[in-house]
Image 1 (cartoon, rainbow, N blue to C red):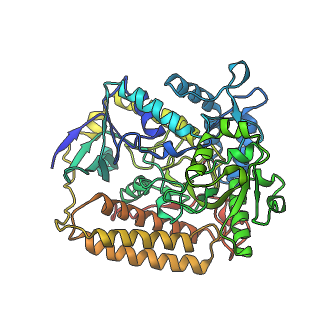
Image 2 (spheres, rainbow, N blue to C red):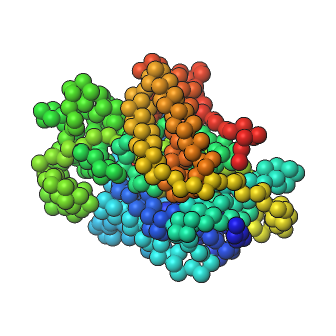
Length: 535
Ligand code: SIN
């Protein structure tokens, strides 16, 4: 098996991975691995924008307060403070790297508003902000000789070995070259997971096919602490009927006056929250789900008639074109349903992106930095990615410059690669198992949960895991197989976390325990593999 050594291994080419690589480039040789092409990332799918205190009427305290309210008691105060106060500098850096956000009179940034925000603070590029940021970062990274991007390389597992004083530490990763089928070991004293979320574990999701929870699953198998996996955010307005991925209709439309209505034309959000259509996302998704179940209807309608047509075309070209391409006239009302959108949990990190496993960092959706608590405030995710990857880069640079880095992490032999079978996998079985898992998670671990549904889900995931484990003793690694292994791991983490939280809070709502229980559950849900089992 081939082994390569680099200073820093970054896994993922979205906003967290590329912005960290750009920060590291003057100091280190950075290898960025991605399982598809470099521009294939969840960042590309982010529509609304990036929230930050950029307007004259705004203040750090207001953004912090809005984030805390959405987070339902579980935000980590220090992480939120860092997010909000370092945010504006990071947004300006994105602009220096070439991202162009919409501007208004006197060339000031034009700021949008989304659910849960008390001020206009969303910098955006039309309604495809993620695409704008991603293309700026890809171009900037291409101009950096110290950054090498390895496309079509799927990271299969992290490499862990005994480091300083016998403590287990991350020493890089084993990577499958999708083109040749070969497995390569990438050795690095510092590894940043920036591999995004796990929306593909649900049947209906706004996340692209690549969002298979790879980073969370690998970090768990390697023994890192994973937090708050029960908090899955369902976006209330995915275009109906849903595709895979579902086409996202940005919340920013509601920020500009669009209103949710049932099929008979009645606005219903006033009955659920004083902020009506601009209530926090968990409230809106549950309200839509409730209306659909009680009325037996397939979708609700986003009425955009309050937005002047010219403004709609100019501010939301993505939504307008996306609807028209699918035969929907947005002005006649956009049919929408909820879809899985974001995981607030992930690899537990401190305020510098450090996981519990020395040498392993995480930033972006793969991480649980503590800023989102039990429910993420809209458009805080791109901000979180760029703020904490910057902080991780600072610690990594200091670590690379410290004299004992080689002694701590390098020199000793790597553990042998795990043996894998050499039989061809059965693609039909892999696809079938993936689809069964996604259906089961959607039906049993969705917006409204219950003890009985979670128990059924746990049994279903366990059975799929058992079948898969038997196959993987015989079959060689393929991308589909490795993704399924990660999806099963993540599905199990979500179900286990949801069963531990016997209350309802933020994005986790269970009909058997419908109230918040601060006495027993005002804390993160933490899961960690027994050290003896960790890979
Ligand atoms: C949206 O535009 O509605 C999505 C923004 C986000 O997920 O924060």
